[in-house]
Length: 365
Image 1 (cartoon, rainbow, N blue to C red):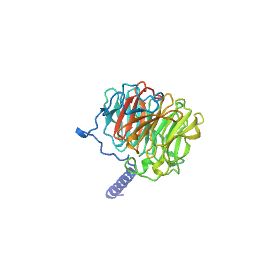
Image 2: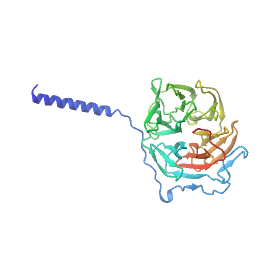
Image 3: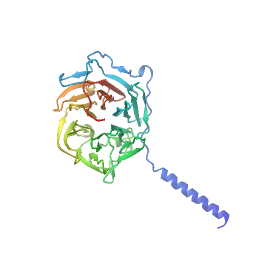
Image 4: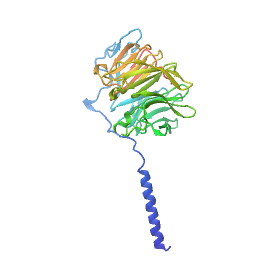
């Protein structure tokens, strides 16, 4: 081969290699829509601090059963501690660092709120439109990602481990909420909210036949279905002794129910049984996320219905509605924080609210 032919052949080879590289790069999926962040200023900004018309005892905290509802220590009020999100979700509190991590789903970012000086900053962007978050027993962040269609864990060195992204060889729908049990098993819900459009994820056809709740084995990593008969499974939480698992079905808009179901848990076998409806009558609104306190009371979000009902509801272990926390925005989720787990942080639309309560959250850490 003469020099001219060799150079022409080399150029053609390089061009083909470049084409292959470009084609391969084109296959990388997007990380999800990154919205224009809201940085409210001036008179249009929602004010931080106690809500308007707050006076002890705070009328935003309504006790339907004063003996059982511990929504206020008395000299406390509901406060707005952060604002400027589009749809705040998935709060998780890190006691060692005294900060809250939560998702701003449409803005494709996770936020961090420091408790000591109330400083708000971006924790991670892009977040693959993360939704639910929790903290495992080792102090690691576990997150559900709509755009990634997976559940991931942020390790202590900052690397990210994929815990679940498929079942039976097919992609998950869009993992929504997640809890970690004391044996390190991971339980998560998988509705279709994150693939219905391009605002809170990436629009796609579901590959799973059902909207399941899954369990990830802590030793083998195997992903198994534990419940398969929900319309849209959503928030989930264990009872303090982990003998019960509460799961929300927010499928009202899909022709299904708006209620909370409770199951008996065999933690060692990784199985659920004896399903029954724990709380209902949320329609025309829905509940989305929940947490339990040390006495087994269920604190759940409320929204998308009567504005007078926006906020948090508290149910006793027998299902009685014993108290409410009223907010000026539709509520999505909540978590007990603070060093003593007695400060309730609430994600509600564009803002984060907080109040001290006269009980403690059951979740550890």
